[in-house]
Image 1 (tube, rainbow, N blue to C red):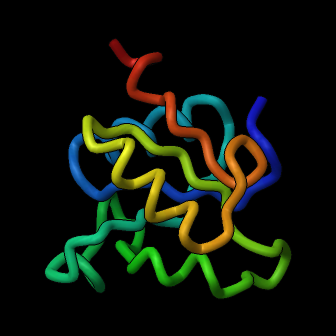
Image 2: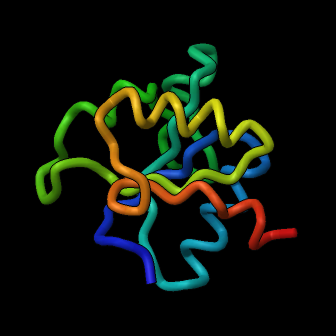
Length: 102
């Protein structure tokens, strides 16, 4: 079981799409994806918004911040970025999702 949501995919590519499918199959309700690529901001991934990682610094209505599930070969880079916003491992994000998919 993951921590309280809402949930974000940690990337907006194929790995992010896989996370969204996985979350939905497990009964979780993802709210979007984050990505460092500014050309993706404002676009959608499977009908959910793609946002800047800066959105992690902004509280949502119900929770301090969304829970991020990272699934990418660039997990170390995404993890460093997520940590830079004060997120704590396992409390605010999970970065081993790619290993479960393989």
